[in-house]
Image (cartoon, rainbow, N blue to C red; front, side, top):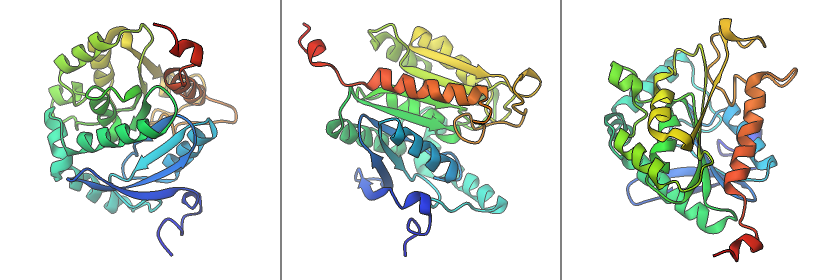
Length: 278
C-alpha cells in the first residue's frame, strides 16, 4: 500500500512524476475542464489543500497539485514542521527565490503550466499559491503566457527577515511593471487575499502588488480579529482552507466562492463566435 492509498481523500487522485531535467516532482491530478495548478502550503499537501483541490474539481477544473515538499497526506508534528521550514530555507531550489531570482521551482512550474495548457480546454491555465508558495504563483505567472489567472493567498515568502524582504513578493518591481503593461484587457488577472490581522502574512506584499500591477490585480483584505464582524479570529491565516467557515458562511467562504468565479471568468474556453472575431 502506498502513502496515497493510505489516505482516503487522495485515493481518487492520479499521480505522476514530472521532471524538467533539473527537478523531479510527484504531481497529483484530478478533474476535467480548464487547468488549475494548486500549490500547497507548508508542510505540504495536507487535508485542507486536498479539500480545496476537490472543490476546484467540483467547480469544473482539471487540478494539478505538485508535491513540492513534504509527504502528501502526512502531517508532521511541531518539530517536523519546524524542520521542514529550516530545510526550505537552505534548499537551493527555494533559496534563489528569496533573492528575487527565477529559480528552479518557477522553471519547473512553467513546464507544468505549459503541459497542462496544451491538453486542457480554456484560455491557458490558472495557478493558486498559498502562504510559502503564494509568491511562487506570481513569479511563475509573470514569466509565461500560459497562465491567465493567478491567485496569491496570504503570501509569506520570502521570509520577512528585513523590511525589504517583508515587502517583497519574490519578483522585482520592474518585472511586475512589465507584466502589467503586457496585460491588454482591463479585467484583473491576479487576485490577492489575506486576513487583516495575519502576522504571518503582512500587508506589505499585497501593497507591492497593488503598486506595481494596478488594475491588473484585485486585492481582498478580509477582516479578522477586532476588525471582524463574523467571528474570524486574529489568528486566522489560511484564507482558502483553514480560515473558511461554511455554516454560517463567513467572509472567507464568500471570497473563496468568488475565487472560483474569477478562475472561470479568466479561463473559460473561447466560444466559437469569439474565435471568429478578427
